[in-house]
Image 1: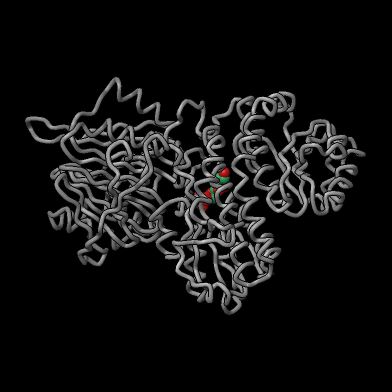
Image 2: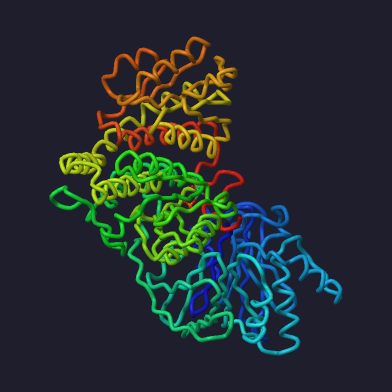
Length: 613
Ligand code: M6R
């Protein structure tokens, strides 16, 4: 949700800010803008350029009308308050102050009303603009930028990451963080600000991660960090191992396709070092629980949003089936405002690619308040979720840039499967032979995913045949039900096709009324437990004229004979089939979206990291 980039140093700032914004565009693309201080003989002059729509509009404008100077802040917006327009685009200026903001200022109405009473006029409909006005008021009183920032930050309620600058001291940028991500990138006689690490990988690998309730003054020679209460903070920097190549398309037409094709590597990295060499157990070296503690857990609550919630649903099925530990899964946005019954010795597992999703963070905080033991599964080192949970299992997928999550889903499911195996081992619910075999089978998955990727062209041809349909059902039973949900979400979010996913057994309770020739049905039906029930449900749909696209196991003639189109996955033990069937549905969704001409990496109305409620 909104991307912020800032630079102060000795180089031309605007191109650095623009290149960072380009890498953050997945956070929002309703509008974009840059504010830079141009050095004129008469003193610095603040120049702001803003454009509605994608960043490319701003890039073209800046080609015609460049901003020169060595300090600048920029923003790419995902609209919350005020529709996407140039007027509502950031940066927002009020007299001597310019700001960029990510998040929501919850008390902006009250603050704005007070300012209007004092005669202030606002030029946008955003909540953010009040920050610039408040800073100016404080500056007029105090005459000191740092003092003004310290005062204003205490007046703001809500979730925010912001950066501000003052025309009279343009080599000092202010940054504050409260429940929205912001990182400081460190250089020699130059410093950087960004919402996320990949924005700055061109320039630095050394980062400082601010905590909630912290602010910083960023100048070319140094950064100084304080709490909102004014206490100085001594924070060590952190070297990030992600390479720039990992955040680039590497010849693929879209990040989504690149990320789908990266999945064999992602699975290997996620499994590496965790499966013991004798295939007799799992090691999570970033989790502090001892086996005795793992053994005490009587219940697991998984909280997540979107795709991570689908992965968590698989996690629930695996945990209960393998370890017989009670598990439940809940949308983080519901969990946080409910009165859940928490059993003693409960583990709360928060799953999030970004580690910054506001609802998931809040759900984990609620769980900690209710004395649950927290564990995060995330892709982002030093993300807010990782820091809050303290016990973390990283998914090692590398930066995921496409808004539609693919490789992180596979990595999350792999971690959750290992977690379930680990619980089974400590709770002694499975034999050592079973444990060894499933770990060996997990280790074989990357090669099986590679085989599915080889079907890219044939899945593309299937998409060509079906791209004209405007609605789709996705059906699955048991472990294939979360896969159906995920496949349906992928298609919906990038191609804007109406999809509905159901457990196949539910069709006859209502949705089957919709079956027609115009409404193809994607059935996830690999060989294994209860497949015959799924095949009966497919027969029911066929009998009513439904057209079946079936994802099943290679060589399964019976399943193939029911389908208009059959897409095979390699033979695999039934528990691990979801990791393979999902890949087929990701590829299908990708090609459907391409055929429908949508912007696959940046679907409309969405943003990668949802840091507002
Ligand atoms: O960063 P998170 O995993 O917490 O994000 C959760 C959802 O916002 C995310 O999975 C979303 O549903 C994606 N658009 C799915 O492709």
